Image (cartoon, rainbow, N blue to C red):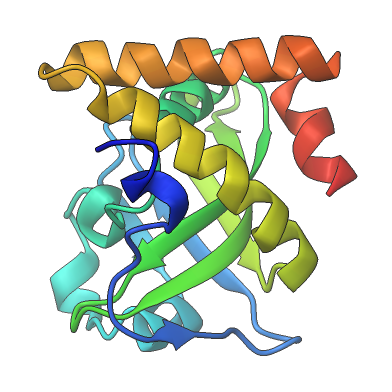
Length: 177
């Protein structure tokens, strides 16, 4: 993808917008396979519970979502820390929807991570506008090399450079939008 092609996020279908009081909740095991999904999640993603349980959470991953952001997310939650992120997902029938996600590890009584929990709310349109600029740059960096793993690293490097230039970490950046 050239920088010119990256001016528009490659979102799928029409945009679905969460209600102000909607709350998407899902839980996964350590490998990111869904163990719980609430009704709001199922409705906006056009999925049934049978279609989600045991499936990778990437089932709803939009091609407009930089893989490098998920790399950062996984690094943090596997280390035991929470992450806030703006994420664009896709529905079963090809539409897309933005969420403001709060992802946390789930711990057992011994303090070991046993899975992950995510709550998602309706994002502010101004925040989506701002984060879209960053995500376009990350997608362009990811597409600048042929190998997907190298592409994810190229996007991650671009993300870290951007955050360093701004003088903040990803959570602080996201929460500032």
